[in-house]
Length: 101
Length: 428
Ligand SMILES: Cc1cc2nc3c(=O)[nH]c(=O)nc-3n(C[C@H](O)[C@H](O)[C@H](O)COP(=O)(O)OP(=O)(O)OC[C@H]3O[C@@H](n4cnc5c(N)ncnc54)[C@H](O)[C@@H]3O)c2cc1C
Ligand code: SF4
Ligand code: SF4
Image: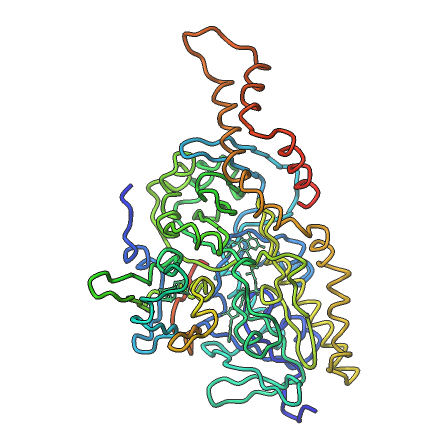
C-alpha cells in the first residue's frame, strides 16, 4: 500500500474554496517566538501548517482546512486571539463540504 | 418582547441537535428558522459513527425506519493492539434488536433536514451566524453579515467549537483538556466485501473499538465501522496530550491502514473521503449553564458527548437535548415567558433524562486520561499472554498457570493496578 501525500488525501474530500479570504489568520513571522512548541505543525490533521526553515517563518494555507478547530486549541495565540491571530469559520458555505461525514 | 414577524425560535446549526429541535418545534406549530453555514445540512459534519436507535425513535416515531442509516450493529469488537498484534474481545450480539446502527453524517443530516422542512421549519444554508443579538442581557436573535434576525428564543446548536457562545461570554472557552481530535477515512467497497471482511451477514454490521499502540500512550482509541458500501476507519486522541507528544497526527492516522490487525478491513480499498473533527469528552463536571434569558444550548456546544473509550455517544444526546430544548420552548412561548425562569425547565428535563448518564459516568474521563497503562501496558500484556499460550516450539511445554503468572508478574505493581482497574469499573 503506498502512502498518500496530504494533497492526495485532501483531493478525496470536497472543498468549496474561497481562495482569497482566509478564515484562519496567523502572523508567520511572529510564529518564530511560538509559545506553544509549534504544536500546530503536528496537531493539524490536514497539515496546513508547515515550518519554513529557510525563510524562518510559518507557512499556513487555509485551502484544504477541515475546519476541525484543533489549531484553535493547541495554539495559545489562536486560542486567546492574540494580535495578528484569529480563528473563524468561512463566512458562507465555503470550505470543506463532506459527502460522507 | 418579540415583534410580529420575529420567529418563535432561531436555531443556530443544522446538525443533529439543531435539526431535532427544529423538527420538534415545527411539529408543535411554532415558527422556527435554522441557520446552517454548510452548503447543505450535513456538509460540515463528521461523526464516527454509530447512532443509538432510541433517539431516532424518540424524535420521529416509527418513521425513523426510513432514515438513511447504514447497518445494524450485530458484532462488537474490542481490540487490544500492540505494534504488530491484537487480542480481540469479539461479541456477536445477534439477538440484540435494533439497538444501534452505523451511520454517515452527511446523508443522514440531509434527510433529517428534509423531514424538518416538511414539518414546517425554515432552513437557510450557506449562512454563517456571526454573532448573537444581546439587549439588556437578553438574547434576542442572531446576526449574519448585515442582517439581523430576531426570535423569542435562540437555540444554540453550533457544535463543538461554540464560537458564538464563547464570544458572548455565555460559556467559558473550550479547554483543550476537555476535547479530543478525530481523524477519519472512509474506504469504499461493495457490500459483499464489507460483509466478508467483517464476518457479518448481509445488511448487518460491526463496530470495532481499538486501544493500544496506535495512539502511542495518549488517551484515545481507534474505530472501524461498517457502512453499506464502505468502511469508516479512524482515530480519536486527547487534543492537549497529543499536542505535547510532538507526533504527527496525520501520519499516525495513516499508520492505521498499515497495522497488520487493521489493514485486512480496508487494505486496497479506494479512499472516498478524509476528514477531521473535534469530540467533546469533558464529562459532567465541565458542563456549562444550559439556558438563560432567551437562549438554550444543545448537543456538542453544551458538552453533551461522552467518550467511554469503548463507545462515543454524542449523536443520541444531541437529538435528545434538541427535543428537550424544543419542548421547553413550546411551553415557554405558550406561557409568554421566554426569560430565564420560563426556560429553566430545560435543565430539569435534561436532569431527569440524559444527564443521569453523565452523573453515573462522572470521573470516567479523568480516570481514563490519568491511567496511561490502559493504552500501553495492558494491551501489551494481553498480547504477550496470548502469544505465550498459543506458542509451540521445541522447548518443553509450560502449564497454563505458570504462563499466566509469568505474564501477570510483568505488571510492575499488581496491587495498585488492581485498585486502579476497580476504580475504573466504577466510573465507566
Ligand atoms: C471521530 C468522531 C467519532 C464519533 N463517534 C460517535 C459515535 O460513534 N456515536 C455518537 O453518537 N457520536 C459520535 N461522535 C460525536 C457526534 O458526532 C457529535 O456529538 C454530534 O455530531 C454532535 O451533534 P451536534 O448537532 O451537537 O453538532 P454538529 O453535528 O457538529 O452540528 C453543528 C452544526 O452547526 C453548524 N454551525 C456551527 N457554527 C455555525 C454558525 N456560526 N452559523 C451557522 N451554522 C453553524 C455546523 O456547520 C454544523 O452543521 C463522534 C465524533 C467524532 C468527531
Ligand atoms: S502554534 Fe500558533 S504561534 Fe505557534 S507556530 Fe503555530 S500558529 Fe504560530
Ligand atoms: S481547523 Fe483543523 S484542519 Fe483547519 S488548520 Fe486548524 S487544525 Fe488544521
